Length: 120
Image (spheres, rainbow, N blue to C red):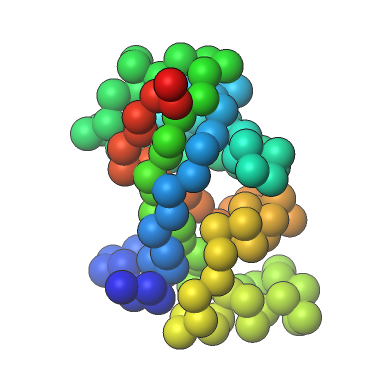
C-alpha cells in the first residue's frame, strides 16, 4: 500500500519499485550500496537489510533490484515548492521522482533493498 506510515520511525513508506541497477560501491560496515539506475543514469544509495546478502553483490555488476522507497515525515529544510512532494501520500509517484528527490535531499529519501537478481 502506497503512503503508509512506518511505526515508530520518522519514515513514511511510499512505493515499491523494481528497477535495473548497477552496483558502483558497497560498504559492509553501514550495509549500504551506491547504485546507478540504468534507465535514468542517476546514482543513489540503497540500504541493505541483514536478510539480504551484501556479500553476494558485486561492484560494477547489474541487477534487477526490488526495493521500498521511504520519505521522511520531517519537511523542515525542504524548499516550499517541494514540500507537497513529501507530504502528499495518496499520489503514486514514479521511482524516478524519488531518485531525483534523493539527489537534492538525500536525508529525506531512503531506499531499502528487498531482493536482487543478476541481469543475464
